[in-house]
Length: 413
Length: 188
Image (cartoon, rainbow over all chains, first blue to last red; front, side):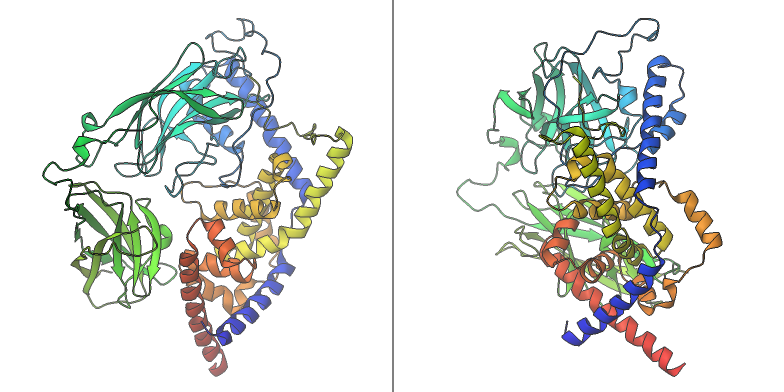
Protein backbone atom coordinates (compact mmCIF):
# COMPACT_ATOMS: atom_id res chain seq x y z
CA UNK A 1 0.00 0.00 0.00
CA UNK A 2 1.41 3.36 -0.99
CA UNK A 3 2.22 6.21 1.32
CA UNK A 4 -0.66 8.44 0.25
CA UNK A 5 -3.10 5.83 1.52
CA UNK A 6 -1.18 5.48 4.74
CA UNK A 7 -1.22 9.24 5.24
CA UNK A 8 -4.89 9.45 4.42
CA UNK A 9 -5.78 6.68 6.85
CA UNK A 10 -3.44 8.01 9.51
CA UNK A 11 -5.27 11.31 9.39
CA UNK A 12 -8.68 9.70 9.48
CA UNK A 13 -7.74 7.57 12.46
CA UNK A 14 -6.26 10.54 14.30
CA UNK A 15 -9.48 12.49 13.84
CA UNK A 16 -11.51 9.49 14.91
CA UNK A 17 -9.38 9.08 18.02
CA UNK A 18 -9.86 12.72 18.97
CA UNK A 19 -13.64 12.53 18.72
CA UNK A 20 -13.82 9.35 20.72
CA UNK A 21 -11.31 10.23 23.40
CA UNK A 22 -13.56 13.08 24.41
CA UNK A 23 -16.56 10.80 24.58
CA UNK A 24 -15.09 8.05 26.74
CA UNK A 25 -16.34 8.04 30.31
CA UNK A 26 -14.15 5.84 32.48
CA UNK A 27 -16.04 4.29 35.36
CA UNK A 28 -12.82 4.58 37.33
CA UNK A 29 -10.50 2.27 39.26
CA UNK A 30 -12.70 2.56 42.33
CA UNK A 31 -15.50 0.92 40.41
CA UNK A 32 -13.07 -1.87 39.49
CA UNK A 33 -12.35 -2.49 43.16
CA UNK A 34 -16.02 -2.50 44.05
CA UNK A 35 -16.83 -4.98 41.30
CA UNK A 36 -14.04 -7.32 42.29
CA UNK A 37 -14.97 -7.10 45.97
CA UNK A 38 -18.62 -7.85 45.19
CA UNK A 39 -17.69 -10.84 43.06
CA UNK A 40 -15.38 -12.26 45.68
CA UNK A 41 -18.04 -11.95 48.33
CA UNK A 42 -20.51 -13.69 46.09
CA UNK A 43 -18.01 -16.43 45.28
CA UNK A 44 -17.34 -17.05 48.94
CA UNK A 45 -21.05 -17.24 49.71
CA UNK A 46 -21.59 -19.57 46.80
CA UNK A 47 -18.92 -21.97 47.96
CA UNK A 48 -20.28 -22.02 51.49
CA UNK A 49 -23.73 -22.73 50.15
CA UNK A 50 -22.52 -25.69 48.20
CA UNK A 51 -20.80 -27.25 51.14
CA UNK A 52 -23.90 -27.04 53.27
CA UNK A 53 -26.48 -27.83 50.63
CA UNK A 54 -24.47 -30.01 48.34
CA UNK A 55 -27.56 -31.80 47.09
CA UNK A 56 -30.36 -29.31 47.46
CA UNK A 57 -28.91 -26.39 45.47
CA UNK A 58 -30.34 -26.30 41.98
CA UNK A 59 -27.54 -26.45 39.51
CA UNK A 60 -28.94 -23.83 37.16
CA UNK A 61 -29.07 -21.08 39.73
CA UNK A 62 -25.63 -21.99 40.91
CA UNK A 63 -24.26 -21.80 37.44
CA UNK A 64 -25.60 -18.29 37.00
CA UNK A 65 -23.99 -17.13 40.21
CA UNK A 66 -20.74 -18.88 39.43
CA UNK A 67 -20.57 -17.30 36.02
CA UNK A 68 -20.72 -13.81 37.39
CA UNK A 69 -17.97 -14.67 39.78
CA UNK A 70 -16.01 -15.86 36.81
CA UNK A 71 -12.31 -15.84 37.34
CA UNK A 72 -9.63 -14.44 35.15
CA UNK A 73 -9.59 -14.25 31.40
CA UNK A 74 -8.55 -16.21 28.43
CA UNK A 75 -5.48 -14.13 27.83
CA UNK A 76 -2.85 -16.59 26.81
CA UNK A 77 -0.16 -14.63 28.56
CA UNK A 78 -1.66 -15.45 31.90
CA UNK A 79 0.60 -17.92 33.56
CA UNK A 80 -0.75 -21.06 35.07
CA UNK A 81 -1.63 -20.59 38.67
CA UNK A 82 1.36 -21.43 40.79
CA UNK A 83 0.91 -22.96 44.17
CA UNK A 84 2.57 -21.44 47.17
CA UNK A 85 5.10 -23.35 49.18
CA UNK A 86 3.32 -26.16 50.95
CA UNK A 87 1.55 -24.66 53.90
CA UNK A 88 0.82 -26.51 57.07
CA UNK A 89 -1.33 -29.53 56.38
CA UNK A 90 -4.96 -28.69 55.87
CA UNK A 91 -6.95 -29.27 59.04
CA UNK A 92 -9.17 -32.25 59.09
CA UNK A 93 -12.57 -32.54 57.57
CA UNK A 94 -15.35 -30.35 58.89
CA UNK A 95 -17.85 -31.59 61.36
CA UNK A 96 -20.34 -34.05 60.02
CA UNK A 97 -23.21 -31.72 60.72
CA UNK A 98 -22.33 -29.31 57.93
CA UNK A 99 -21.49 -31.99 55.44
CA UNK A 100 -24.36 -34.41 55.54
CA UNK A 101 -23.41 -35.84 52.18
CA UNK A 102 -19.87 -36.48 53.28
CA UNK A 103 -18.47 -33.99 50.81
CA UNK A 104 -15.24 -32.48 52.05
CA UNK A 105 -14.60 -28.96 53.24
CA UNK A 106 -13.78 -26.11 50.92
CA UNK A 107 -9.98 -26.05 51.37
CA UNK A 108 -9.83 -29.66 50.37
CA UNK A 109 -9.02 -30.25 46.73
CA UNK A 110 -11.50 -33.06 46.22
CA UNK A 111 -13.84 -31.55 43.69
CA UNK A 112 -16.81 -33.54 42.56
CA UNK A 113 -17.61 -34.05 38.93
CA UNK A 114 -20.74 -32.00 39.38
CA UNK A 115 -18.80 -29.11 40.90
CA UNK A 116 -16.24 -29.18 38.12
CA UNK A 117 -19.09 -28.84 35.64
CA UNK A 118 -20.65 -25.94 37.49
CA UNK A 119 -18.19 -23.04 37.45
CA UNK A 120 -16.06 -21.50 34.70
CA UNK A 121 -12.43 -22.47 35.08
CA UNK A 122 -9.05 -21.28 33.89
CA UNK A 123 -7.20 -24.17 32.30
CA UNK A 124 -3.58 -24.63 31.30
CA UNK A 125 -3.03 -23.78 27.64
CA UNK A 126 -4.18 -26.22 25.00
CA UNK A 127 -2.00 -27.40 22.18
CA UNK A 128 -0.95 -24.12 20.52
CA UNK A 129 -2.89 -23.35 17.39
CA UNK A 130 -5.74 -25.68 18.28
CA UNK A 131 -8.17 -22.79 18.66
CA UNK A 132 -9.43 -24.04 22.00
CA UNK A 133 -10.03 -21.56 24.80
CA UNK A 134 -8.23 -22.07 28.08
CA UNK A 135 -9.59 -19.12 30.03
CA UNK A 136 -12.99 -18.90 31.66
CA UNK A 137 -14.10 -22.27 30.33
CA UNK A 138 -17.20 -24.18 31.37
CA UNK A 139 -16.60 -27.92 31.29
CA UNK A 140 -19.34 -30.05 29.75
CA UNK A 141 -20.51 -33.55 30.55
CA UNK A 142 -21.15 -34.13 26.85
CA UNK A 143 -20.34 -32.20 23.70
CA UNK A 144 -22.91 -29.75 22.39
CA UNK A 145 -20.89 -27.38 20.23
CA UNK A 146 -17.61 -27.44 18.46
CA UNK A 147 -14.97 -26.21 20.87
CA UNK A 148 -16.72 -27.54 23.96
CA UNK A 149 -14.40 -28.88 26.65
CA UNK A 150 -15.68 -32.23 27.86
CA UNK A 151 -14.86 -33.66 31.27
CA UNK A 152 -13.97 -37.19 30.23
CA UNK A 153 -12.65 -38.68 33.47
CA UNK A 154 -11.88 -37.71 37.07
CA UNK A 155 -9.77 -39.31 39.77
CA UNK A 156 -8.55 -38.21 43.18
CA UNK A 157 -5.40 -38.46 45.22
CA UNK A 158 -2.81 -36.52 47.17
CA UNK A 159 -0.66 -35.63 44.19
CA UNK A 160 1.49 -33.06 45.99
CA UNK A 161 1.92 -34.99 49.20
CA UNK A 162 0.52 -32.32 51.50
CA UNK A 163 -1.96 -34.59 53.20
CA UNK A 164 -5.02 -33.28 51.36
CA UNK A 165 -6.70 -34.63 48.30
CA UNK A 166 -6.49 -33.06 44.85
CA UNK A 167 -8.53 -33.68 41.75
CA UNK A 168 -7.14 -34.88 38.44
CA UNK A 169 -9.29 -34.62 35.32
CA UNK A 170 -9.04 -35.70 31.70
CA UNK A 171 -10.36 -32.90 29.47
CA UNK A 172 -11.06 -33.04 25.77
CA UNK A 173 -11.65 -30.01 23.59
CA UNK A 174 -13.90 -31.44 20.90
CA UNK A 175 -13.37 -30.12 17.38
CA UNK A 176 -15.28 -32.05 14.77
CA UNK A 177 -14.14 -35.64 15.06
CA UNK A 178 -10.93 -34.73 16.86
CA UNK A 179 -9.43 -32.03 19.01
CA UNK A 180 -6.74 -31.79 21.66
CA UNK A 181 -6.90 -33.27 25.16
CA UNK A 182 -5.07 -32.70 28.41
CA UNK A 183 -4.93 -34.05 31.93
CA UNK A 184 -5.15 -31.29 34.52
CA UNK A 185 -4.81 -31.31 38.31
CA UNK A 186 -7.21 -29.06 40.21
CA UNK A 187 -7.19 -27.75 43.74
CA UNK A 188 -8.96 -25.09 45.74
CA UNK A 189 -7.54 -21.76 46.81
CA UNK A 190 -7.95 -20.30 50.27
CA UNK A 191 -11.31 -18.81 49.26
CA UNK A 192 -12.54 -22.22 48.21
CA UNK A 193 -12.46 -21.50 44.51
CA UNK A 194 -11.36 -24.13 42.06
CA UNK A 195 -7.96 -23.46 40.51
CA UNK A 196 -5.82 -25.44 38.13
CA UNK A 197 -2.57 -26.57 39.74
CA UNK A 198 -1.06 -27.53 36.45
CA UNK A 199 -1.08 -29.77 33.44
CA UNK A 200 0.00 -33.39 33.76
CA UNK A 201 0.21 -34.11 30.04
CA UNK A 202 -1.44 -32.97 26.83
CA UNK A 203 -1.83 -34.36 23.34
CA UNK A 204 0.54 -33.33 20.57
CA UNK A 205 0.05 -32.79 16.88
CA UNK A 206 2.24 -35.85 16.23
CA UNK A 207 2.16 -38.20 19.22
CA UNK A 208 0.43 -38.83 21.50
CA UNK A 209 -2.72 -37.75 19.75
CA UNK A 210 -5.01 -39.33 22.31
CA UNK A 211 -5.30 -39.64 26.08
CA UNK A 212 -7.41 -42.66 26.94
CA UNK A 213 -7.67 -42.85 30.73
CA UNK A 214 -6.04 -41.81 33.97
CA UNK A 215 -5.55 -43.10 37.49
CA UNK A 216 -4.03 -41.51 40.58
CA UNK A 217 -1.92 -43.97 42.54
CA UNK A 218 -1.95 -44.15 46.31
CA UNK A 219 1.49 -42.54 46.41
CA UNK A 220 0.21 -39.54 44.48
CA UNK A 221 1.70 -40.39 41.10
CA UNK A 222 -0.64 -39.83 38.16
CA UNK A 223 -0.81 -42.54 35.53
CA UNK A 224 -2.14 -41.65 32.10
CA UNK A 225 -2.79 -44.07 29.27
CA UNK A 226 -1.70 -42.40 26.05
CA UNK A 227 -2.15 -43.48 22.44
CA UNK A 228 -0.09 -42.56 19.41
CA UNK A 229 -3.07 -42.04 17.10
CA UNK A 230 -6.50 -40.67 17.96
CA UNK A 231 -9.51 -42.72 16.96
CA UNK A 232 -11.90 -41.39 14.34
CA UNK A 233 -11.91 -40.77 10.62
CA UNK A 234 -11.80 -44.48 9.90
CA UNK A 235 -9.02 -45.19 12.39
CA UNK A 236 -10.11 -47.65 15.12
CA UNK A 237 -8.47 -47.07 18.49
CA UNK A 238 -7.44 -50.74 18.49
CA UNK A 239 -4.86 -49.88 15.84
CA UNK A 240 -3.26 -47.29 18.12
CA UNK A 241 -0.30 -48.12 20.28
CA UNK A 242 -1.24 -47.56 23.94
CA UNK A 243 1.17 -46.85 26.77
CA UNK A 244 0.82 -46.15 30.48
CA UNK A 245 3.01 -43.22 31.48
CA UNK A 246 3.50 -42.00 35.03
CA UNK A 247 3.86 -38.40 36.14
CA UNK A 248 4.66 -36.77 39.44
CA UNK A 249 4.24 -33.28 40.89
CA UNK A 250 7.63 -31.59 41.33
CA UNK A 251 6.58 -28.45 43.18
CA UNK A 252 5.96 -26.29 40.15
CA UNK A 253 4.68 -28.74 37.57
CA UNK A 254 4.31 -32.35 36.58
CA UNK A 255 7.14 -34.43 35.18
CA UNK A 256 7.13 -37.91 33.72
CA UNK A 257 8.85 -40.35 36.09
CA UNK A 258 8.05 -43.75 34.61
CA UNK A 259 6.85 -45.47 31.48
CA UNK A 260 7.97 -45.10 27.88
CA UNK A 261 8.69 -41.61 26.60
CA UNK A 262 8.21 -42.29 22.90
CA UNK A 263 6.23 -44.51 20.59
CA UNK A 264 7.60 -47.22 18.32
CA UNK A 265 6.57 -47.00 14.65
CA UNK A 266 2.97 -48.07 14.25
CA UNK A 267 2.69 -50.73 11.55
CA UNK A 268 -0.93 -49.80 10.90
CA UNK A 269 -0.02 -46.20 10.14
CA UNK A 270 2.13 -47.02 7.14
CA UNK A 271 0.39 -48.67 4.21
CA UNK A 272 1.71 -52.21 3.78
CA UNK A 273 1.84 -51.88 0.00
CA UNK A 274 4.33 -49.03 0.09
CA UNK A 275 7.89 -50.28 -0.07
CA UNK A 276 9.96 -48.54 2.54
CA UNK A 277 12.62 -47.60 0.02
CA UNK A 278 10.29 -45.76 -2.34
CA UNK A 279 8.90 -42.31 -1.64
CA UNK A 280 5.52 -42.21 0.01
CA UNK A 281 3.02 -40.44 -2.17
CA UNK A 282 1.34 -37.33 -0.87
CA UNK A 283 -2.00 -36.85 -2.54
CA UNK A 284 -5.32 -35.22 -1.67
CA UNK A 285 -8.80 -35.26 -3.17
CA UNK A 286 -11.54 -32.69 -2.72
CA UNK A 287 -15.27 -32.22 -3.08
CA UNK A 288 -17.42 -29.23 -2.15
CA UNK A 289 -21.11 -28.51 -1.70
CA UNK A 290 -22.83 -25.60 -3.37
CA UNK A 291 -22.52 -22.17 -1.79
CA UNK A 292 -25.90 -20.50 -1.29
CA UNK A 293 -25.95 -16.84 -0.28
CA UNK A 294 -28.84 -15.64 1.83
CA UNK A 295 -30.38 -12.17 2.00
CA UNK A 296 -28.05 -9.30 2.92
CA UNK A 297 -27.35 -8.78 6.62
CA UNK A 298 -27.61 -5.42 8.31
CA UNK A 299 -24.06 -4.74 7.20
CA UNK A 300 -25.13 -5.13 3.58
CA UNK A 301 -23.21 -8.35 3.06
CA UNK A 302 -24.64 -11.69 2.00
CA UNK A 303 -23.29 -14.77 3.68
CA UNK A 304 -23.21 -18.49 2.96
CA UNK A 305 -21.13 -21.61 3.48
CA UNK A 306 -19.70 -24.43 1.43
CA UNK A 307 -18.75 -27.73 2.99
CA UNK A 308 -15.43 -28.83 1.60
CA UNK A 309 -14.40 -32.45 2.09
CA UNK A 310 -10.73 -33.34 1.83
CA UNK A 311 -9.60 -36.95 1.46
CA UNK A 312 -6.09 -38.28 1.77
CA UNK A 313 -5.83 -40.37 -1.41
CA UNK A 314 -2.12 -41.00 -1.03
CA UNK A 315 0.01 -43.43 0.91
CA UNK A 316 1.34 -41.18 3.65
CA UNK A 317 0.02 -38.81 6.25
CA UNK A 318 -0.35 -35.28 4.93
CA UNK A 319 0.84 -33.06 7.76
CA UNK A 320 -0.51 -29.78 6.40
CA UNK A 321 -3.49 -30.31 4.10
CA UNK A 322 -4.23 -26.91 2.54
CA UNK A 323 -7.71 -25.92 1.41
CA UNK A 324 -7.15 -23.15 -1.12
CA UNK A 325 -10.09 -20.86 -1.84
CA UNK A 326 -9.28 -19.04 -5.04
CA UNK A 327 -10.31 -15.39 -5.05
CA UNK A 328 -12.72 -14.61 -7.82
CA UNK A 329 -13.74 -11.05 -7.07
CA UNK A 330 -17.08 -12.14 -5.68
CA UNK A 331 -16.71 -14.73 -2.92
CA UNK A 332 -14.68 -13.48 0.01
CA UNK A 333 -13.62 -16.06 2.59
CA UNK A 334 -14.88 -14.81 5.94
CA UNK A 335 -11.77 -16.01 7.68
CA UNK A 336 -12.62 -14.34 10.96
CA UNK A 337 -15.13 -17.08 11.63
CA UNK A 338 -13.32 -19.99 10.06
CA UNK A 339 -14.05 -23.17 11.97
CA UNK A 340 -11.59 -24.73 14.34
CA UNK A 341 -10.65 -27.38 11.77
CA UNK A 342 -8.64 -24.64 10.10
CA UNK A 343 -5.56 -24.89 12.28
CA UNK A 344 -3.87 -22.08 10.38
CA UNK A 345 -5.22 -19.39 8.10
CA UNK A 346 -3.07 -17.68 5.49
CA UNK A 347 -3.40 -15.63 2.35
CA UNK A 348 -1.81 -15.82 -1.02
CA UNK A 349 -2.21 -12.99 -3.46
CA UNK A 350 -4.84 -15.04 -5.26
CA UNK A 351 -6.37 -17.18 -2.53
CA UNK A 352 -7.29 -17.67 1.10
CA UNK A 353 -5.79 -20.83 2.53
CA UNK A 354 -7.14 -22.88 5.42
CA UNK A 355 -4.62 -25.45 6.63
CA UNK A 356 -6.17 -28.48 8.30
CA UNK A 357 -4.77 -30.80 10.94
CA UNK A 358 -2.89 -33.86 9.64
CA UNK A 359 -4.77 -36.36 7.53
CA UNK A 360 -3.76 -40.01 7.57
CA UNK A 361 -3.95 -42.18 4.44
CA UNK A 362 -7.59 -42.80 3.60
CA UNK A 363 -8.76 -40.28 6.17
CA UNK A 364 -11.40 -37.78 5.14
CA UNK A 365 -12.38 -34.54 6.81
CA UNK A 366 -15.12 -32.03 6.13
CA UNK A 367 -14.86 -28.37 6.94
CA UNK A 368 -17.64 -25.79 6.69
CA UNK A 369 -16.18 -22.66 5.14
CA UNK A 370 -17.99 -19.34 5.45
CA UNK A 371 -18.05 -16.79 2.66
CA UNK A 372 -19.42 -13.31 2.28
CA UNK A 373 -20.07 -11.18 -0.74
CA UNK A 374 -21.14 -7.70 -1.72
CA UNK A 375 -22.64 -9.03 -4.95
CA UNK A 376 -26.35 -9.60 -5.47
CA UNK A 377 -25.93 -12.13 -8.24
CA UNK A 378 -26.01 -13.66 -10.74
CA UNK A 379 -25.49 -17.33 -9.88
CA UNK A 380 -22.14 -18.73 -10.87
CA UNK A 381 -19.41 -21.08 -9.80
CA UNK A 382 -16.25 -21.06 -7.71
CA UNK A 383 -13.19 -23.23 -7.42
CA UNK A 384 -11.50 -24.70 -4.41
CA UNK A 385 -8.16 -26.49 -4.52
CA UNK A 386 -6.38 -28.78 -2.09
CA UNK A 387 -2.68 -29.51 -1.87
CA UNK A 388 -0.19 -30.82 0.70
CA UNK A 389 1.57 -27.90 2.37
CA UNK A 390 5.00 -27.70 3.93
CA UNK A 391 3.69 -25.95 7.01
CA UNK A 392 5.45 -22.73 5.97
CA UNK A 393 2.68 -20.26 5.13
CA UNK A 394 1.07 -21.40 1.89
CA UNK A 395 4.03 -23.26 0.44
CA UNK A 396 3.20 -26.51 -1.28
CA UNK A 397 5.24 -29.68 -0.88
CA UNK A 398 7.38 -29.83 -4.02
CA UNK A 399 6.43 -32.53 -6.46
CA UNK A 400 2.88 -32.88 -5.22
CA UNK A 401 -0.22 -32.21 -7.26
CA UNK A 402 -3.05 -29.77 -6.75
CA UNK A 403 -6.55 -31.25 -6.84
CA UNK A 404 -9.51 -29.00 -7.45
CA UNK A 405 -13.25 -28.95 -7.76
CA UNK A 406 -15.80 -26.41 -8.91
CA UNK A 407 -19.03 -25.86 -7.04
CA UNK A 408 -22.15 -23.79 -7.81
CA UNK A 409 -22.64 -20.40 -6.18
CA UNK A 410 -26.29 -19.43 -5.83
CA UNK A 411 -28.09 -16.32 -4.65
CA UNK A 412 -31.33 -16.77 -2.76
CA UNK A 413 -33.36 -13.97 -1.29
CA UNK B 1 -3.19 -27.99 49.86
CA UNK B 2 -4.10 -24.36 49.78
CA UNK B 3 -3.27 -22.50 46.61
CA UNK B 4 -3.19 -18.76 46.90
CA UNK B 5 -3.60 -17.38 43.44
CA UNK B 6 -6.21 -14.94 44.45
CA UNK B 7 -5.62 -12.90 47.57
CA UNK B 8 -8.58 -11.32 49.24
CA UNK B 9 -9.21 -7.78 48.29
CA UNK B 10 -8.80 -6.35 51.71
CA UNK B 11 -5.48 -8.12 51.95
CA UNK B 12 -3.68 -7.10 48.80
CA UNK B 13 -0.95 -9.42 47.72
CA UNK B 14 2.38 -8.68 49.37
CA UNK B 15 5.34 -8.31 47.09
CA UNK B 16 8.26 -10.45 47.88
CA UNK B 17 10.70 -8.55 50.05
CA UNK B 18 8.43 -5.60 50.67
CA UNK B 19 6.52 -5.03 53.82
CA UNK B 20 2.80 -5.27 53.34
CA UNK B 21 1.66 -1.67 53.83
CA UNK B 22 4.24 -0.35 51.38
CA UNK B 23 3.41 -3.03 48.86
CA UNK B 24 -0.28 -2.40 49.17
CA UNK B 25 0.10 1.30 48.56
CA UNK B 26 2.45 0.89 45.67
CA UNK B 27 0.38 -1.79 43.99
CA UNK B 28 -2.76 0.24 44.37
CA UNK B 29 -1.13 3.36 42.97
CA UNK B 30 0.33 1.39 40.09
CA UNK B 31 -3.05 -0.02 39.21
CA UNK B 32 -4.72 3.37 39.30
CA UNK B 33 -1.99 4.88 37.17
CA UNK B 34 -2.30 2.13 34.60
CA UNK B 35 -6.05 2.52 34.55
CA UNK B 36 -6.00 6.27 34.05
CA UNK B 37 -3.21 6.13 31.51
CA UNK B 38 -4.81 3.54 29.28
CA UNK B 39 -8.53 3.29 29.81
CA UNK B 40 -9.43 5.89 27.20
CA UNK B 41 -7.09 4.74 24.48
CA UNK B 42 -8.08 1.10 24.94
CA UNK B 43 -11.73 2.10 24.76
CA UNK B 44 -11.13 3.98 21.52
CA UNK B 45 -9.56 0.88 20.00
CA UNK B 46 -12.37 -1.38 21.08
CA UNK B 47 -14.97 1.09 19.87
CA UNK B 48 -13.34 1.15 16.46
CA UNK B 49 -13.51 -2.61 16.42
CA UNK B 50 -16.96 -3.36 17.83
CA UNK B 51 -18.66 -0.16 16.73
CA UNK B 52 -20.21 0.66 20.08
CA UNK B 53 -18.66 3.06 22.55
CA UNK B 54 -20.68 1.91 25.56
CA UNK B 55 -19.93 -1.71 24.89
CA UNK B 56 -16.26 -0.92 24.44
CA UNK B 57 -16.19 0.87 27.79
CA UNK B 58 -17.76 -2.17 29.41
CA UNK B 59 -15.23 -4.51 27.86
CA UNK B 60 -12.27 -2.42 28.93
CA UNK B 61 -13.69 -2.00 32.43
CA UNK B 62 -14.14 -5.76 32.61
CA UNK B 63 -10.58 -6.31 31.44
CA UNK B 64 -9.32 -4.02 34.20
CA UNK B 65 -11.45 -5.93 36.72
CA UNK B 66 -9.78 -9.14 35.66
CA UNK B 67 -6.39 -7.49 35.82
CA UNK B 68 -7.12 -6.27 39.33
CA UNK B 69 -8.18 -9.77 40.40
CA UNK B 70 -4.70 -11.01 39.65
CA UNK B 71 -2.88 -7.73 39.87
CA UNK B 72 -0.02 -9.09 41.98
CA UNK B 73 0.92 -11.24 38.99
CA UNK B 74 -0.05 -8.90 36.17
CA UNK B 75 1.85 -6.00 37.67
CA UNK B 76 5.03 -8.03 37.40
CA UNK B 77 4.67 -8.58 33.66
CA UNK B 78 6.97 -6.65 31.39
CA UNK B 79 3.98 -4.97 29.79
CA UNK B 80 0.84 -5.12 31.93
CA UNK B 81 -1.06 -3.03 29.39
CA UNK B 82 -0.53 -5.70 26.77
CA UNK B 83 -2.21 -8.13 29.12
CA UNK B 84 -5.18 -5.85 29.69
CA UNK B 85 -5.45 -5.11 25.98
CA UNK B 86 -5.36 -8.75 25.04
CA UNK B 87 -8.01 -9.59 27.58
CA UNK B 88 -10.25 -6.79 26.37
CA UNK B 89 -9.87 -7.93 22.78
CA UNK B 90 -10.47 -11.54 23.77
CA UNK B 91 -13.67 -10.45 25.42
CA UNK B 92 -14.66 -8.52 22.30
CA UNK B 93 -13.89 -11.30 19.88
CA UNK B 94 -15.07 -14.28 21.86
CA UNK B 95 -17.43 -16.49 19.99
CA UNK B 96 -18.32 -18.81 22.81
CA UNK B 97 -18.58 -16.57 25.77
CA UNK B 98 -21.14 -13.94 26.29
CA UNK B 99 -19.79 -11.53 28.79
CA UNK B 100 -22.09 -9.92 31.25
CA UNK B 101 -20.07 -6.98 32.27
CA UNK B 102 -20.37 -5.05 35.41
CA UNK B 103 -21.37 -1.97 33.52
CA UNK B 104 -24.28 -3.22 31.48
CA UNK B 105 -26.76 -1.51 33.74
CA UNK B 106 -24.89 1.77 33.64
CA UNK B 107 -24.70 1.51 29.90
CA UNK B 108 -28.45 1.38 29.52
CA UNK B 109 -28.77 4.46 31.69
CA UNK B 110 -26.13 6.28 29.74
CA UNK B 111 -27.69 5.49 26.42
CA UNK B 112 -30.94 6.95 27.55
CA UNK B 113 -29.64 10.11 29.08
CA UNK B 114 -26.33 11.10 27.59
CA UNK B 115 -26.16 11.31 23.83
CA UNK B 116 -22.61 12.66 23.81
CA UNK B 117 -20.42 13.17 20.78
CA UNK B 118 -21.22 10.43 18.34
CA UNK B 119 -18.54 8.52 16.46
CA UNK B 120 -21.18 7.80 13.84
CA UNK B 121 -20.50 11.17 12.31
CA UNK B 122 -16.99 10.15 11.38
CA UNK B 123 -16.80 8.49 7.98
CA UNK B 124 -14.12 6.13 9.20
CA UNK B 125 -16.52 4.62 11.72
CA UNK B 126 -18.83 3.50 8.95
CA UNK B 127 -15.99 2.36 6.72
CA UNK B 128 -14.59 0.14 9.49
CA UNK B 129 -17.93 -1.61 9.75
CA UNK B 130 -17.50 -2.86 6.19
CA UNK B 131 -14.25 -4.69 6.90
CA UNK B 132 -14.12 -8.37 7.82
CA UNK B 133 -13.32 -8.64 11.55
CA UNK B 134 -9.72 -9.82 11.17
CA UNK B 135 -8.82 -6.95 8.87
CA UNK B 136 -10.61 -4.54 11.16
CA UNK B 137 -8.68 -5.80 14.16
CA UNK B 138 -5.41 -5.48 12.29
CA UNK B 139 -5.93 -1.90 11.10
CA UNK B 140 -7.25 -0.78 14.48
CA UNK B 141 -4.33 -2.32 16.33
CA UNK B 142 -1.98 -0.75 13.79
CA UNK B 143 -3.39 2.77 13.67
CA UNK B 144 -4.96 3.19 17.10
CA UNK B 145 -2.89 0.94 19.33
CA UNK B 146 0.30 1.71 17.39
CA UNK B 147 1.30 -1.93 17.43
CA UNK B 148 3.89 -3.29 15.03
CA UNK B 149 3.13 -6.18 12.69
CA UNK B 150 5.10 -8.38 15.03
CA UNK B 151 3.11 -7.28 18.07
CA UNK B 152 -0.20 -7.75 16.27
CA UNK B 153 0.87 -11.23 15.19
CA UNK B 154 1.71 -12.00 18.80
CA UNK B 155 -1.60 -10.77 20.14
CA UNK B 156 -3.61 -12.51 17.43
CA UNK B 157 -1.51 -15.67 17.56
CA UNK B 158 -1.07 -15.74 13.79
CA UNK B 159 1.98 -15.56 11.53
CA UNK B 160 3.27 -12.11 10.61
CA UNK B 161 2.47 -12.82 6.98
CA UNK B 162 -1.17 -13.18 7.90
CA UNK B 163 -1.14 -9.83 9.68
CA UNK B 164 0.50 -8.17 6.69
CA UNK B 165 -2.18 -9.61 4.47
CA UNK B 166 -4.95 -8.37 6.76
CA UNK B 167 -3.38 -4.93 6.92
CA UNK B 168 -2.88 -4.75 3.19
CA UNK B 169 -6.42 -5.73 2.37
CA UNK B 170 -7.90 -3.72 5.20
CA UNK B 171 -6.11 -0.52 4.19
CA UNK B 172 -7.07 -0.93 0.55
CA UNK B 173 -10.71 -1.50 1.44
CA UNK B 174 -10.77 1.42 3.88
CA UNK B 175 -9.21 3.75 1.34
CA UNK B 176 -11.82 2.74 -1.21
CA UNK B 177 -14.72 3.17 1.19
CA UNK B 178 -13.43 6.52 2.38
CA UNK B 179 -12.85 7.92 -1.09
CA UNK B 180 -16.38 6.89 -2.05
CA UNK B 181 -17.73 8.58 1.06
CA UNK B 182 -15.78 11.73 0.35
CA UNK B 183 -17.05 11.89 -3.21
CA UNK B 184 -20.59 11.55 -2.00
CA UNK B 185 -20.00 14.26 0.57
CA UNK B 186 -18.35 16.56 -1.94
CA UNK B 187 -21.17 16.30 -4.40
CA UNK B 188 -23.91 16.25 -1.82
